Structure formats: structure tokens, C-alpha cells
Image 1 (cartoon, helix red, strand yellow):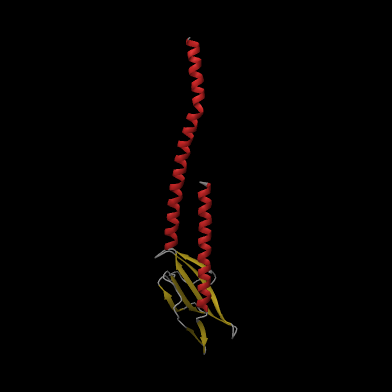
Image 2 (cartoon, rainbow, N blue to C red):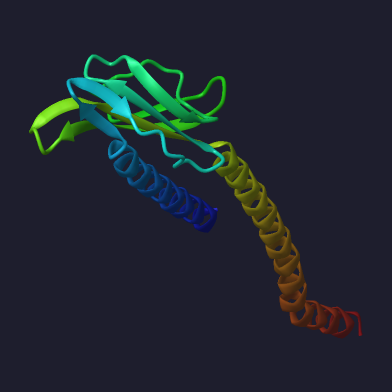
Length: 170
């Protein structure tokens, strides 16, 4: 049980770190698409997302400028919270980064990237089922092994008891 819990915790930590790394890379790439052009904020909407990801671009006031992908977060933009999680209508995790125009040294908006966690949740459920089945098999084998070892350990005692019974009956 302890081994199974340790494996699950380690696996979840690694998968979450990989997800965070993917989101950070996507957010940095998407932030390059937000530009300040003649006082107007524009989005060069080049396709960047994979099948289970989304990008949302916001101006400095938090108004949605453009989006891309099938799994955007539907929770309101919260610039003070870099990581956001939603459970409905689909489970997803998002990362929000501020975007600055370093040439003009001004803040121009936000980029929020998200990724559906449905595939990760299915994988974790499969891992949980596998660990539960493994634990049940380990318990069953431990029980059977314990009975077998007890039987083997009792054989010499039973033989001595039978010899003692024969001796006393003779």
C-alpha cells in the first residue's frame, strides 16, 4: 500500500510538472503574438495549439481580444492568479502571463493558455485501477504464502505429536 501510494504521488507530480512546462512554453510562444501597433493591440493569430489546448489573448483591461483552440478556460480572467483550474464544462488547467512590449517598455495585456486534463485523468484512473489490482494480488499471494509456510512449519510439530501419542499409547 505504501509503495502504491508513493508511486501514485510521484507519477502525479511528474505529470503535473510536464503539464506546467507545456503550458509555460505555449504561453511564452503565444505572448509573442500580442503586439502593440499604432496604439492598438493586435493578435497575430498563428496556429500554435495542439488538439487539447487553447490560447486566449486579453488586453490590459482584461477584455478578450482573440482565442484559439477547443479547450479555453471559461472561468473569468484573474490576473492575480497565474494558475487556474476548472472542472466544468470540461476539466482544464490554465496559466496566465502578463505581456509587455519590451521595445516600448509598456504593459499591453495578458495571455492565458489552457489544456484539458481529461486524458491525464483517464491515465490516473488507469494507474489507480492497476495499483488496486496489484495490491489485491499482493495481499492474496501473501495470504496464500503465509498459509503454506505455516503448514510447512507445523509438519515437524505434528510428527512429534504423533510419535508422542504412539509412545504414550504403547
